[in-house]
Length: 412
Image 1 (cartoon, rainbow, N blue to C red):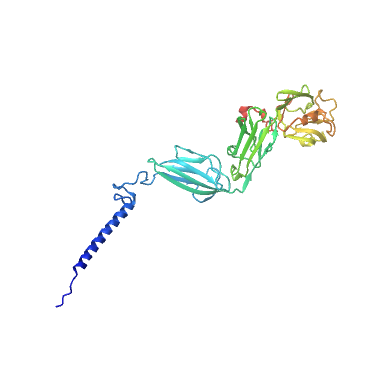
Image 2: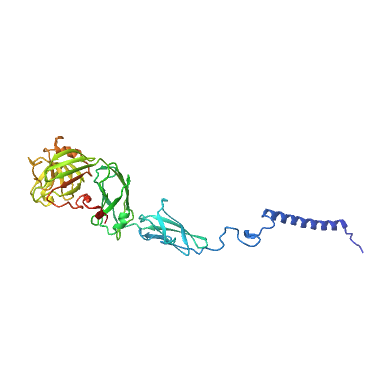
């Protein structure tokens, strides 16, 4: 029998190789364990007790957020539609932006349960909403939404006076006449913001449903700067009708000129900054055509104009095609103007059809006559006060003449 010799050295080598492999594998495991954070580490970041790391939220927040309108909504109304609410928690953050990144101001109310915008939204605009809330355990939840407001078929704007950048007299209100009748006056008034430097309380008053005037309690102080923000874009003026105007208007109050006409004495005293600068003989409305009493604000200056009795209900009593130096005081046709046909009436008796007349020359070419002097020293917004006439006080809505209302009535 042939027996194959077995090398003892080869068997021992194989045993040593297996042992070496085991040692190498053990060393590798130790090395990998060290790279993983040490032999005490556990899968998924848990500690030796199986707990979550400090600060991690272990369960979902109970706070349930709701954003109205819903994600992707279109043709959304600009007023009353946007609202963020939370149940079983309180709101901690609400951010609403338009497509240009401009933030929408709003307020959290109801102890953190509700957020609503402070003003209406713009029409035809896409808005994004991001809201965050916490439950009673301090756990947070978040919600996001995007929606687009309606593009209205019917719109309105406000036509205003005075003009942007103008300098006006101390009696000038800021007056807006709307192109559509307004049935939501509170929303429209809220969309118009008046600020002044120096600060003064300014309030608005509605005349009918299409005109809104703003003024302080007393005449403006000289030098006051007034800024009006017309944020009418998207505001609901009436059902189905929305504003489409977004404009800022600024004007400055000039020197203080108030002229007092005494219809009984037939004179007018012109004061500037409280000092009488000139006394002018005048003629006012004759019996049956008396001039209004009260405070009237200059709204328009015309170097020459035509005055026809038919336009103010006086038939064909007069038609003067070249009345010089005319300044409008009421919408109904009261002017203070030059008069070249009055003869000896000035300072002596009343001969007009309700206007205040000052001596002038035909064509208005002379700068030395009283009418020319007064015209050249007056500006839109100056005040003419008439007293001792036998007519009633002018209606506050007849021209820019809200100064004939008490402050309490104005604010009603």
